[in-house]
Image (cartoon, rainbow, N blue to C red; front, side, top):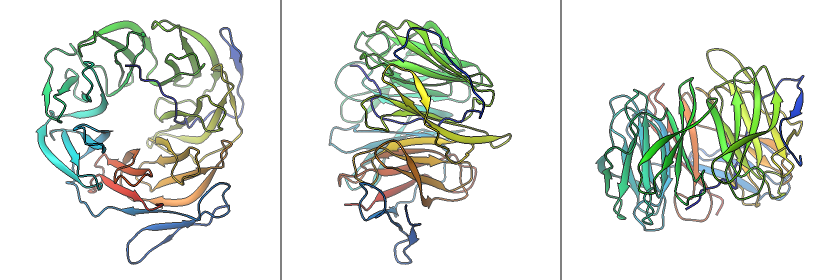
Length: 399
């Protein structure tokens, strides 16, 4: 099964002075929300936004999770009942967890323990049996773990799936065109490594290594998975896949302000059928720079849109249609600051909605999905535990 990103976004901070060069063949107003005293929900008047509904409202779920540091959350239908369940990659000596959704956005701990020192998590069908399996990475350099699903959300660890840690984070894509999901891992400040799946969930290291921060998707619209990388104090580059896992350099933009820290995402933000990019650069102990939106010409060649987004630190970036107008909006998380929502006008221009939610926590990622089954996108915040707050569910009240 191929997994290719076809929707997403990248926040990109680049210097004011930049040079662009080809390295391969290339074709190349919103009112501020108000808070309801009865429900605590945030409401914003979006009537002036093109294509937007009259309001966007999120209400925090009443469910309280234990105050355990969670780096990342995986969302997928684990038990085959047509709703999104959750996997918490819990840090330190806390066991990672499987939580099952009752269909209304309320999550029940299954009691399964998926090991300590969790960091990254990715979900996909690793053994090609039609259900969703789990990969969990650790932050203590223990071997990365694979858990196979029996189809009813009962998970068993697969011995020897990885011989080593593949890094602090993990993503799954079919990189070599053999119809199984391979793994991409980032190791601290080291780099991005690729591990190939034998089709049964057993992985072996490839010879390919890229700089630490990368995002993967079909950048040239040829049906395979390419990569956009960010290299500290160097800039951004695209490498194109020939469909068999061989990558060649295609595009580069210099940026001495590029940082390892700061997430990227991909998505068709301007509605022209290709993947555009958003990138952030920022670290709470050093500097942060405004984000930018890069637009793809369809060949994997990017140009700066000229937009400037809020400078954030340790940012998480997520894209999804939050207001029901059929374009990709943006959720941006920050270090010990409230999360932000930016609305898209349909042409790739984002406006800060003024919507803020959450406070005084390290909300590392905002995970989007229809958690309560009402047809719109909700938000599951993973909280890394710098404060006392637990993970949070915010339900979209659009419908």
